[in-house]
Amino acid sequence: MSRKSPVVIPERSPRLVGVVDRDGQDRTRRVVISYSARHPRYGKYIRKRTVLHVHDETNVSHMGDRVEIAECRPVSRLKRWALVRIVEKAPVKADIVYGESVADRGTDAAKSTGKPDRKNEGTSTGGKSRVKGSSK
Image (cartoon, rainbow, N blue to C red; front, top):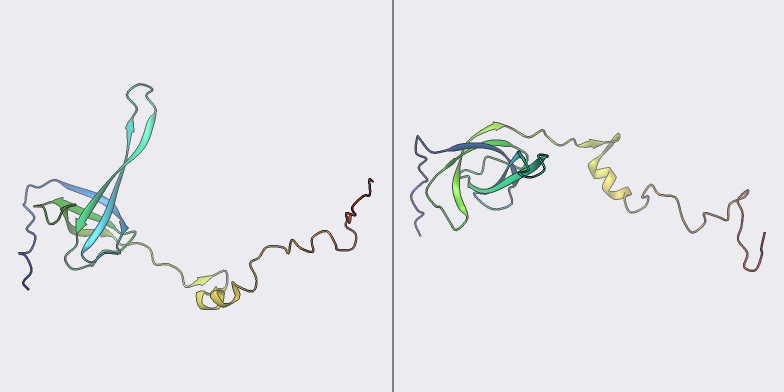
């Protein structure tokens, strides 16, 4: 089965810059363009966003990347924009968290959650013990 012709981006098409929000699908990215607009009645500036589905033919962009996109012909029901270039790559996630590697942390997560044991909280020495019927 042959693929459709590659997406051609016209020279004069509108271009926007946004951040890749989702990259789970093949050749499709969800790009969020955030901006602030003034409320018509109250004058307060409100944060707004536009969500666009973008065609990424080579799957080079990933979540968190700042990308430039351009309007193109409809590729699918939702995709009317195509990736032009990656403006800035997302920072790489750290492998070491609090002095432990991520692999070590996964095995100890079930043993220790970092929270105190609530069952034996009031029974330690020096603490008040509750006895049913006492009214001190």
